[in-house]
Image (cartoon, rainbow, N blue to C red; front, side, top):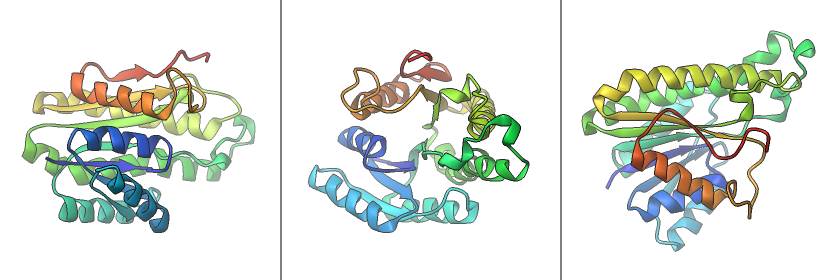
Length: 221
């Protein structure tokens, strides 16, 4: 089997996705900033029968992110599935009239430079395999900008445009690029936004390979 890389892996959605895709036989590369937390999560997954390893990187550092993905490839094997789903920082969410050019540096590095670096790093694997999936996970401001969350509204819109361009360009090569919009918070126990339910949704998107944009719930929820 091949590897799934989860960028922004944590104990909620990342862990649930790792269990879902790992249960289908994929090895899991966990990427986030804290190596200790990644090692703990990898140990928890191993006890559940999922082969997982952690590779520390800050998504705002393209070189570090590409190095982590390179190490994941070398350790676990070719990357067939990439999920980009780090949680944005609270300081990205300033009101639009208070947002300066400097305030947009972080959100754009997080939601544009990071995805571009990650996709460019794994694309040779996807092309060599002749298949693969890239999954972008975003909040509702990716499609409905919010005046009090200018940074994420602007950066998520740019990430969405990049993802859509990839979807249209890579489809003839058998590489599926899709986006899952999760309005509001991820809520344990929610019938559509529980982490395990979202993991099932992402698996279905990977399996069915239909369309670019998908919604976990209604936008006004």
